Structure formats: C-alpha cells, structure tokens
Image (cartoon, rainbow, N blue to C red):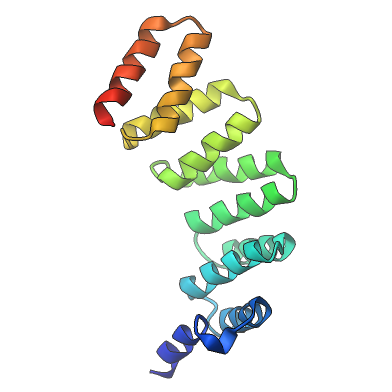
Length: 168
C-alpha cells in the first residue's frame, strides 16, 4: 500500500514547485526503476524545465536496461530535436518506426521530421501509411494532396481530396 501512496503523492501539494517535483520524480525513478508512470512524468518534467540533456540521458539509460518503448523513443527524439540534433532525432524515429510500424504517434513525429528535412519521398511514404492507419488524419492527406499537385498528378490529388472529404 505504501508504494501506491508514494506513487500518488508526486502530483499533490507535497510537490508545490517544479524543482520539488523534479527531485521527487528523480528519487521515485531510482527507487522504482521500472515504473513507467514515474519515468513518463519525469521525462515530461524535463521538457517543462528545458532539461533536454538530462531527459536524453534518462532515455538512453532506460533503453539500455529495458525493451524498446515507443514513448521513450519519442521523448528521445524530442530531446534531440530540442538540442538542434534534428538528423539524430529522425534516426531515432526511423528506429521506432521499424520496431512499431503501426504506432500513430511515431509515424506523425516521423512525418514532421521528414517535412523539416524536406525529404519528400519519405514524407509521402509515411503519410500514405498514416492515412491507411487513420483515415481521419487531415494533415497527412494535406501533404499527399500537395505533393500530388506539385508533381502534376491531378487525378491522385483528386483521389486524396475525395478520400479525406469522406472521412471528415
């Protein structure tokens, strides 16, 4: 029971400041190294405090001692991106895609990475996968329509537009 109480205290008034939350979560992660909720809350806290290097360190440590986890890989790519390591962030997302090919958050983040790198071929590939997995993904349809128009594939653009229209 004490373990359960300990888990709940982090969000209460006991941790009134961000720094206290950070200290509490770091200690909780040490005491309960396999607790995903503590890990995710600590990673989120690192983002709020812009402690990207610490967050990256936690991701790498977690991945060394645990099976691959899409959430950790997403956080790792975010920390890399915040440290202006966009190429490395996309590499992590490509690894995540290989491990979790149907994970929508991974695919959306990867599409964003490819868009920032102007990697049109991979962007279209990922967006095509996204609309299959989630037919209501309007941004992915937008990318597909725009790319079809840029390459003067007007029938394909019309197809994507009609597909998106029917799912909205």
